[in-house]
Image (cartoon, rainbow, N blue to C red; front, side, top):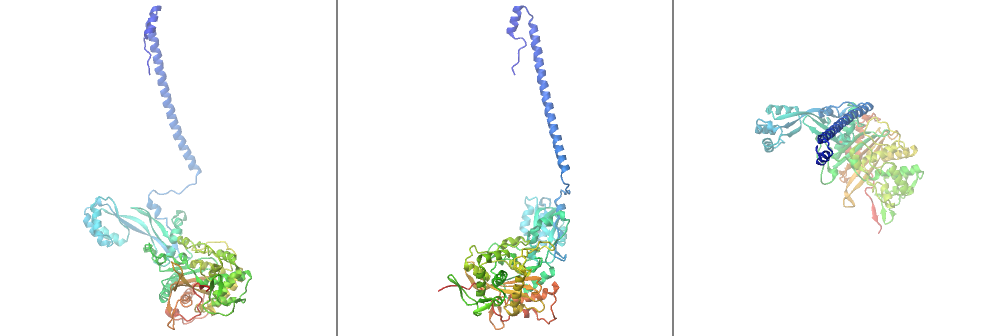
Length: 610
């Protein structure tokens, strides 16, 4: 800033020339300077006041807006700041349909260390190594004597282990409370429950999260405090589940199979009463997943929902039921059984020559490939695809398991005449046993589509009418005759009116083609046939059993059917279905002994025309 001089020389000289007093000029300039200084000071003060007023206005405006937002919002339940208080009460129990505990919580402790607070780190390491043999002593010594300020020792310990650590008397070893998830029934229903683990962890708490099965599918629901700790009620029955697993394990052993699966479904509701996949696992000690090789070799693999299998002759009822519904045939309609049937450069054979003409019923009873293909040709490709899609055989099952999405059926991209033929008898389209159970339940449910579920008591709208009740009833009658005089005669358990169909499918090679000595043997059943209530699917992976005549058999009639029959004997009374009479039943191993039965065709019998 340039200051004006008080006595400017030019003005002083002119004032003297005019005889004026120069001091008046100085007094005037001094007065003007003081007024300018006062104006600047006043403007600075006014600016400060405006700034302070703006700050106060902003602050009070923010408080007012926040108060208005709180006044107009819905009240929420207050949350504690400590993580453990949120976790301890959040994960609900899981029960079966009768309220029996399948998964619950247990208060336990973790152990961690502050090495810098230890009095004798070496003695502490030696004491921990004695209590926990899986800990490495040298690594503990190195950690305790190094620069680490904190380290986990064990995420979960038993009360006995906690007391033993207390007895070490080391102040640098500390405990934190936490909840752990336990499964009191061990490996029973392991694939359904899946398992859980720890998410966010602190020294005083740990977040329990689902990692597989219904634990993961319902993770948000199980942790939601709004449910007030109400348990998740599953549709399975613990007694039925254990019976299924025991029978499948015995059958798997007797039939020398590498794996087994079974699913029992209530027809009217779609509720799964039991579901088992062997080998299985204990969710209390969940194994690590396989990183190489065939995923189905892992006990974590759920064959019921993740398996993608060609299910063989169990599919033959689908084209027959559709043809009945379309009015193309009736149970006694004669169909040409002349073999082979030629489609382009391929020909399809039957395992036996069943005669020149077969009734529609005999086609399913004798399990004729040729007869089934001729019926499929009457239906046509487009109608065949539409019907199978309505049965749910083109999409992953909507059951409440996270693994279900990986069980997407393998559907041919192209659907020429030869594909339509092979799909009609269960080859060329790979689906899971749960898909098969759902499709059979739809037939048993008067033709109304059934949606599988693992939740008990959930109300669902009636499914789409896919078959007329009359066509569905005729289909079940045909399946009943498969049991009374066809390939599944060993499943004719007295008093339970079992209807069903066997299927023995050669397993495909990863490199193409099919194995000659590896099959998937399946029996799909409905009972009682006169009033269908339940669907049971049993599959054995690569079974092989020696018959009474010394020959080796892999067919479903000699391997899977006896296992399914034993299972029906076990669960029938548990379901409230009483057999007609009391019989002296033989031992389980004796009941599994195979008999020589008519063999349904296995594999795709396609041979290029010469």
